[in-house]
Image 1 (cartoon, helix red, strand yellow):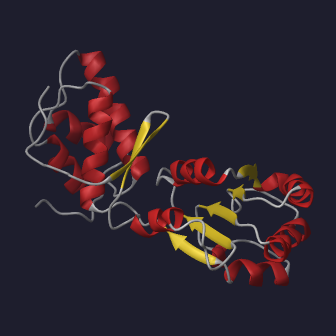
Image 2 (cartoon, one colour):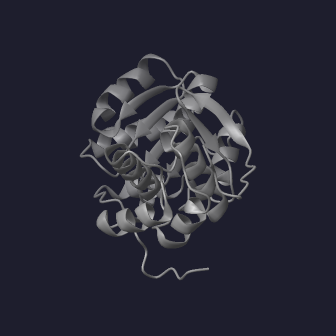
Length: 231
């Protein structure tokens, strides 16, 4: 198995399940948020980041450390019931992707302040983009501690591609990762989709992953970024 002459020596959070979480400039503030618990100055924290950016991994790390229970946003009423029965850390996931009881959410955030427990809220977008009609809730969420995970930088994207190929035990021609990074969309979702497509194609064609195959699939899968120039 051959890999490109690129070395990505990033620190990482050990695997929870099957995935390691690599730490780079694009996500280090999110990692600090988790590492700084307990002791958050604000009991409400919002962790925002695009699909595949590692929010679920960080939530799982925090739950393991804090004993927090997790609720999807649409189960806001159940989260309030849990907080009333026992004041302990909670996670509210995907608040920007579901319909939920806004009054219950406002009640939950007030309970967190009154009973001194922490709530971690996750979303793909920033609070200013959420469609919330209750002014008091909108104000409360906008005053929360906000940490946003950016799209991956070059070091992180490269490390993820190396790991995705290694996980599949794919034979990869030298230079494929650097070639792909210069041409693909800078996102974790695109990295996952590209490696999945390359894995399928290499299996079907019974050959290793080459630059030519990567070029073909970047175009065919709509994953190329035409704004990026060859380096």
